[in-house]
Amino acid sequence: MTLDPYRGYDLIGDVHGCVRTLERLLELLGYRRQGGIWRHPSRMAIFLGDLLDRGPGIRETLHQVHAMVEVGQALCVMGNHEFYALGWSTPAPPGSGRRYVREHTPRHQRLIRETLAQFEAYPQEWSEFLRWFYRMPLFLDAGHFRAVHACWDADFIKPLQAQFTNGCIDEGFLKAAATPGSFANMAIDRLLRGTDMRLPHGLTLTGDDGFTRSYFRTKFWEENPKTYGDIVFQPDALPELAAQTPLTELQKDELLRYGAQEPLLFVGHYWRQGRPAPIRPNLACLDYSAVVGGKLVAYRLDRERRLDADKFVWVEVDAQEVPR
Image 1 (cartoon, helix red, strand yellow):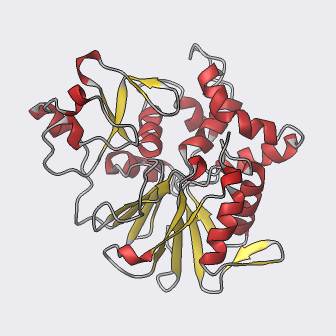
Image 2 (cartoon, rainbow, N blue to C red; image 1 turned 180 degrees about the horizontal axis):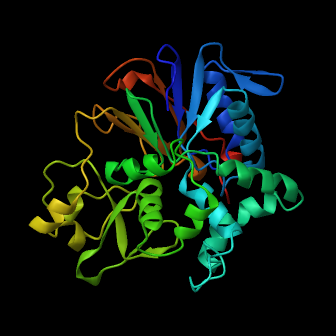
């Protein structure tokens, strides 16, 4: 996608329905509400996905971001939660062994419950937003910077660009993603959920969200990792036994690496904590756990080729927007 090289861009992490906090961040960034739409005279907002689920202002968040996108004041890439919403609402293809692309399990229902509740009285609006999600690109490549919800992997992005020049998938691709091991399934998993690895020794991990997992999220940039603990990239720490376990040479070779000389890359998704800062000179995660009492974070990008720690901007999330 070609973007105006003379315009500034404000990249914004996962909102998850924290609409009042989003409004405070936009105001801090110099946006003003005109005719009901947040606008800036010289800059554009780029949202990194996951506008919905969990928070109390999901419907309002979607309305506000959609309005900005429609008038050219913002772009929004697809997050895994937008994809989940499409999958929840779409019948699975014949022979898949499931009724919907995203199965209606208790675990999946728990994630989307708040969104469905807030749209219960507005079914037509929900249908319109689902159609909008198809118009969210999976990634943006502006030349001097890139944006994707979780992970940039050229081995998936190049064939996706050949199939979808605007980066936006269709219903056929969504349904194909219901088949484990298919290209669509693996591409969505990589770009919207990132890289992962099975815990060693048959261990499992129960996170703060109450879910028990046998896999953990991994870094996709570490140059010389030696142990499992060197590559973990999630808020939940690994069990000590797992963290100290050495990686095999095969495991090291199979790790994805986003090179230090690649263009600036912005991601969300990973529930970081602490003071927002670059991960490395060309990589920033802007998800700082807003909906669980963290921060809603933006990066003010101009023409720099290396990230500047002073250009992160954030607001603390309003206490009333933290789910009980």
